[in-house]
Length: 636
Image (cartoon, rainbow, N blue to C red; front, side, top):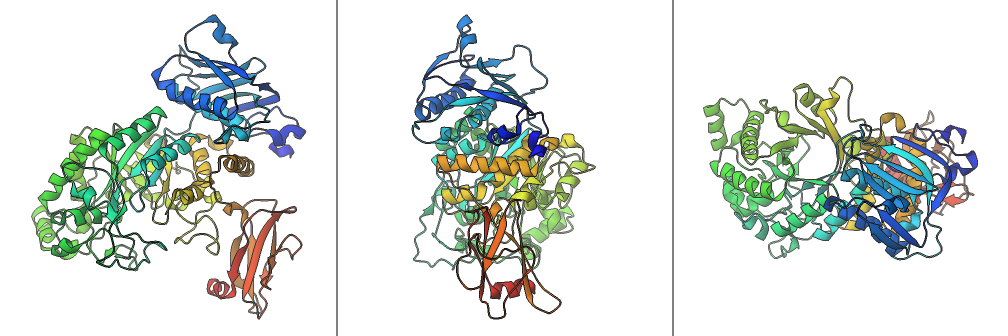
């Protein structure tokens, strides 16, 4: 307990007995000093702050929490007046910038006089309000009025600012479509943890989601497929008579509405139009964009297998690429990027560039002729040529281009293009050494669509990224110019996201970890302390009726054979303070069952091992079923 008296690496003026009551702030502030006591909010509250259109949403957010949940009567003073100093909660925009706060930082002081939040810019006030909400009792997260709560703000002195300017989350709405209101909800949940970029993956093989008036078939045909439920990529091939009515798209007016919604919450939205691969929805809508004659028979993919990964790289069973040797493609992209750039004020457009199968290109007469004419050695250089042409198109629209790290292949990438590194850190390291700005998104740390626990209990995906893996993420590798690393983001692909509740399950708590990595200084991060705060926020999610994964409580499984050839299972835990109990007799173990303190020998005739974790007398994780057949496979 004494080790925790230094919270997040900053001074904490709390006695040991009060430590457990310490507010759980995520992401950890730069500096936070807590002292004994709390400011009680009266039934009638005066709030004061500068009158600014940029702060209207911030003020409305806090007002709704205080009135609709806490039941307070709120009066706002938005004009300078002597009485403003008497307000219970005050907001101040600094007349002279405070260098310690930068563009997005804030200071928050709570004492006997009330709460005072200062910032250099309105965005800092907004983030100060997010922290203030976290300082209030968890019941503030309720969707309805709550009675019987002592509404107090603990005494604290916080000075806080982010480490990285780019703190992103990527939402894939192509594999499964999410409505306008669900996207807004996603933004609300992002900003509560101080994320500020929504990378919106709008096009892919399974759906084209943005209205392009120059090419109406993109949404008339390209936005819909056959509804399938089960495990993505294992679906049966759709039959001709199955209705293609599943999906949807956003009209340009809806896009503008969502962009404005993000701006009001200080979120920049970056659209992604994924080309030249991942383009089946576009090719099915306009087959003339392909170099493959059979494209006239293509349909939007519904999740059936059509890429062969057994070679270590993508081999297409159907050609899902735009044809780099087809001038119609560049006319198409010029018009698409023109309309997209008019919808999104953010400086970047993401062009994808990842996982582009080249097996059709390698034997296509048009592309082979282009290679000969332009002196291109291989299909990687063909894609590099395509990327350079697209960069000129995007630049002509007043935007900067960004792409996944594959766009480095083939050489010649314009210096102004930013690179998003997803295949580990190597692509980002190479890009930075070549002078490109980089966003680090390594899949082994920040792909929150991957399993977050053991495959015996998690919805199946090909790989696991545990909470601890996300918390261990360091965006700036050794030897890289930190100025070129703009930040990082959590990426949420939606192949296996059939509804918003499961989206939440996959997002939390791992996005807590990534938020802290991107906001907090490295010295202020501490795993054990972080887990305590995660548990507090899980309690807040319970009040808010938001879904999250309990995977951090469930064991990590290692399987082997001992010297006698016996199967052994070694369950360990990601977090401390848990005990592991098991059974082999099909009964459900509890805290009175045998405890696994090391490798457990699997009995000769057992068929299943059931495992559960406890903290004291409380079950923490779900009961995990490991079949002996699975254990044998793992041992091999």
